[in-house]
Image (cartoon, rainbow over all chains, first blue to last red; front, side):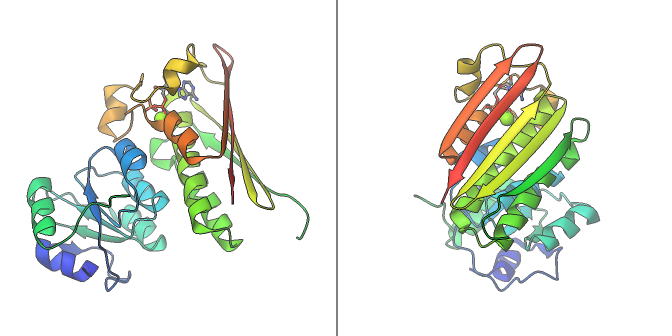
Length: 115
Length: 141
Ligand SMILES: Nc1ncnc2c1ncn2[C@@H]1O[C@H](COP(=O)(O)OP(=O)(O)O)[C@@H](O)[C@H]1O
Ligand SMILES: [Mg+2]
């Protein structure tokens, strides 16, 4: 699924229009604990989170993820968006809850990576 | 630059949580420029990032040194913080002394040190209470 399609499914706004949203993602995970993302997640392309601080973007970058979706109406500030753009990470924001957003993307075919 | 080792040094501030992770970001960018394989870059960057976070949340800051030799990334993370009284306990999955404040920032699951060991090819930790902690680790490719 393309990142732009993820945005459509979630009614999400693309906050980094300068990143390539035609890239495909096949796997996703949802968490507010960056520690868990770093420890348990393998080869996920997309991170859904309700946590809003710069470590979210750094965690995604260190894991080579290419898209972060902020749920529950969380909106990162511009410096965070600039950092994401520089790292080639597309950032989306949706008003939907974590559960709802994960459910929609699961229904649309995104899966967890199973190594 | 052929033959010579390439070194990077970073001072990590203990007071700015929002800046933690800038050193591992830079190392990642440098390794990419050098054409190191992406799997090795990822493992080194994650291990360094966990170490950087620990410097900020547990040690009041410290230093990171990275030394590149052909086929291996050597990393050292040192601090003069409080030290670790029981290293076996600190190394066990899920043990954390992190505050609720740190947890609210998304860290403190007690997986950092085990993660650093898991992602690297060699890992050694030395610590003395009241003196500080020193970690050396390497990723081969
Ligand atoms: N540099 C350090 N200085 C002092 N204590 C440390 C340091 N690094 C780790 N620790 C101790 O080891 C514990 C486990 O570390 P870690 O596995 O990274 O988990 P976390 O950072 O989530 O607590 C920490 O909670 C802390 O008590
Ligand atoms: Mg840690």
